[in-house]
Length: 573
Image 1: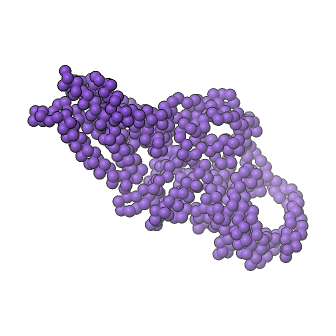
Image 2: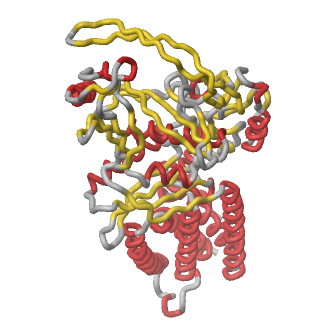
């Protein structure tokens, strides 16, 4: 076959250039270690300086752990095995974590259980109190309970990892595992309002420590709007607590709201260990029903406007009690989604004072103290996130929720690769058996592989996730490509007698008329699914449209050039 003639063709050169470019973007490789998926806030890993990866980072550009304490880590299983060996003997010791970007030292911290005892101790507190612009020193002496501290284990170092990727292809939930949720606003919203909801949700999920995520909006033919959230490595419970609740936080004195959640009222939410955690004054206790309750506490900093509003509200209140037991006659009521979650007593000395530092408290319940402590810290983290990011503009309903195991994802991936290989092999055998020309069978194989490579390269460039629906779309696109190649080959090499008088250019023109007609029908059929579909349906439509477009405008013309070259050789012989 005259390959020189092919290499001189502009359409062939363009296709080869795009194939090379796609391979460079996909960048198939083998990397050592495990890749960091996320780093939790206020964790040992975060304190050591390990950054939380950006959701927009390419898979191969994310930081990878190579070894811990000089022990090589080459898979997720090896990482889990090492972490499982960390016990109480490691407390206050340092782990040397080597990554592809440097060396970090992570301190192993204890998990402490607090218990109130019957014993007390005397504590002297000195406070500065301002009354009528006169500051005086107030000394308070009180008996406080002694808290027993018991080490119950070790804290999670705060990293989520996965096997190092072998390319820049982003795997969807079907292949990597995670949770997909479809949300619907309870009230009708505009596109701008929906964009604000998505922006707020993205901020909330990032503040909670979930970064490997995708948020996008869609709608159906009836005009109903939806938000699709895909998060790798998150539980269904996390998603429901963070997204299904509006997160409207209000602090009220009586019926007057003095501040709300969000950056307009709250300038800083403390997450450091010295300002957030299990409340040492309250600790954990056993309820009458036998369950365990642990209290948490963390500090927040109010804006000047919020502090001034609180001062105005407290100025109107009366003082009840005397001495150390003097309080204002109303409490600071904390509401989350219109439900009272806590009440804080206001000391008499704070009347009319613009207080900017406030301690927020709450609780967690469990069958054991360790479970109650863990639930309390989870509740604290969620409340901190809501206070940082504010409420969602509208309430959302969960229409659909799917959780997929990572182990199933690996099985899906291996099966998809096997099916693709067997499909290409089977098609090639049938094509060769029918036309009895090896060059035609090889051209079909080259065209199919080219379309797959171009599709995957396009996926990397636009940041599109590869899932089972996308794989189905690729199979549909390459399948229609084989149909088109058969049409081209039949028209040119196997023309009927009544068309023998036609030139090969006329035959090719007739073949491409059929191809463009089929292409138009496919796109028209997929467009309603793309605009009105959600989740996997939308991904399937998108992949199919892109795939058949690449085929019709890039690979089919090159295949036609190959057939033209074959025909020229036949005529010359």
